[in-house]
Length: 397
Image (cartoon, rainbow, N blue to C red):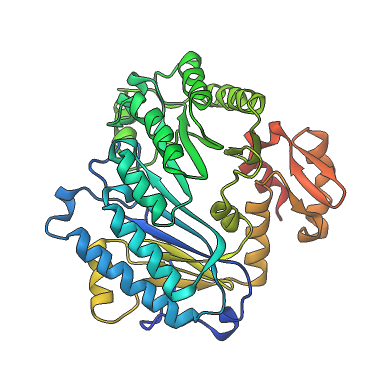
């Protein structure tokens, strides 16, 4: 699994600099649920199976998560309502619906949820039933992000996903029947052995489900995963860059024809279906991350929790913050982050964020067809989206 970054020691009481607490940016809460029934071969997220956790129970985790919410409330006060809540993992829906809705109620009690708050959970289809989804909706959830990944059995097998294609499609319909306002499908393209026809079949699933959002990510072979080992042994081929580009362009064509607009490099939505929580990240808002390994950002201070659920829970049981380290971002750090994140958005980046030398490079990027300059903003073109990281790297000083 990916390692946590280096940083300065975080205060054991969780306190933040006074200037960070003066932030008036929108506030979000992320809740990391670290449980999975099994680990997918491509995954390097901070997740654990029951065998890996031994006697560390979900109840211990939930107690710690509630304790961290109490800590966050003490540190931040009730100056701002929470605009968005996002449960990620892992598999949040391995926990009982009452556990998830109980955390939402606690967030509302401590901070107050904005009247139009977006409350999302990620879910693997095999963990869902119509009754479970109804309980989530009644408990305040407004949005479901379904980890479908593919509808092709042999692709799911390579990814080591345990659900059937039909289960994912059914879950989307159950969510709509339960009253979820927004439903997203997460798809992965570029899996070894996936043909263009296979990818087309997964995109066609969008037409068969009542969704208003699609996230489509190219498969990345992360070091330390079983997939990386298979590639190294020659059991499966490394994803091919040209194949990934062709599949991205197919996604853009199919989804655009269905009325979805690309609003971030890897995300498409129908009007009003954009994920407000992820937009908060990309626009530099504030959020507190609850759970082992979760990252937070408040007023230019970034901090992250202890990675293992056991050490995370132990710190909170001792009345201490679970934060392992933090960094105070300089104005230049924050400016660079704006370039890195906002240029990925369809709305683009205000030119005022760029330095004179960076501004001098814009004409070259535009001439190559990788970006367009519209008024006082710079936006990536469809070709530029395929090379977003490189375009940003070449643009920055």
